[in-house]
Image (cartoon, rainbow, N blue to C red):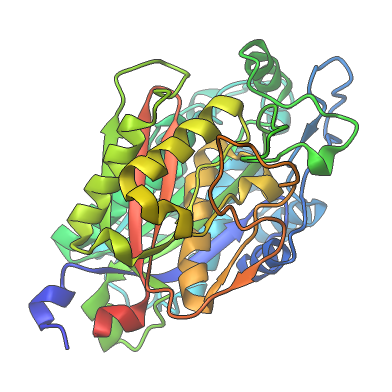
Amino acid sequence: MRRQKDKERFVAVTGIGMICPLGITTSECWENMLQGRSGIRRITRFDPSDCLTQIGGELPEEYYELEKRAFSPRVYKRSILPSRLAVLSAKQAIEDGNIDLDTIDVNRVAVITGCGGSTFGDQIDLHGKKGRLGMTHEMLNALSACVSIEFGFKGPSFNVATACASGAFAIGLGFDYVRRARNLCVAIGMDTMLLKGTIDGFNRLMALSEDNEYPEKASRPFDKRRNGFVLSEGACAVLLEPYDYAVRRGARAYAVISGYAATSEGYNIVAPEPEGKEIAKTMEFAIQRAGISKKKIGYISAHGTSTPHNDLAETKAIKMAFGKDAYGIPISSQKSMIGHSIGAAGAIEFAVTALTLYHQVITPTINYEEPDPECDLDYVPNKAREVQSLDAAITNSFGFGGHNSAIVLVREDAVLT
């Protein structure tokens, strides 16, 4: 049995709230991922016919019905889609964590959001007019502020923007805060960048798949025929608290965070370092800080964007970090099913990793049909995989600008032994 002092350095994941192209609740998203379903379709919220890429991972129609029930007309008018997503995913996580808002000390709850930049641009729900509140609509810090205001939380509240790694950075910073301050944190990743301007920009970078004829097949991480990522939207919130506090209040822990690392590649504003050296270093740092052996890692949730360069660099990094053991570690990419939701991606993938440890089943990498000789690891192709005694996992997130993040999670039973 671990000593109490050892347990105090762990942070429990006690609540999850997920909204993505596969559903508007965590259970719905999780079940659809286990079934290997795709949420990628032709874009319907605007006419994409003049875009090179005409497909994406849109929020389900049910989400907009949920918004109508959840927000008054006045609040809806004064907010934007990303802030509403943040509030609704946070509400799910808080309810899932069974936190009593009437008795909790609101001064001890932090809110950290991760968003790559959804508050700027031609937001569909701004109707083309900024109006009197246009300035507040564009404030990135408004995302965390809206959540703090909604629930009356008075701890630290801020947003972090590290492109595609924003959600993971928010959770990593939340881990550091909870461990040091011994308080609670709601960490949220979100982005709603499925817009004409964003698509055009990524097309100019030749980053997006243009496989418009077969949308469900377009996102194919690690497959030889991968030709770019598919842009999507979504949000995911997690409730983080000191592990020993969660134990005392009888909370369910999906998993426990034991280590986190963030690095900067210092290489290129859009391209990863091709040999994966900095990615490997990030994973190694996270594992060292978790205080466990590399051999304990039994699953990797890959960044896995479905771009030729990123998937290859990540594969090389995994081999570099784990050596010959890399070939025995299951790896999967949820982006194969839901596309790349930028700031939401790292948070969704973190939550899926926690659920993987809790349920002992790994979500698949769908559309893996033609193996790439250079990407030759176990990517859990096309079907979910049940596992036994999976005690530790790592989730990777990498963003434009060279922002790398890796988080190590441990199954609760493994913490207790």
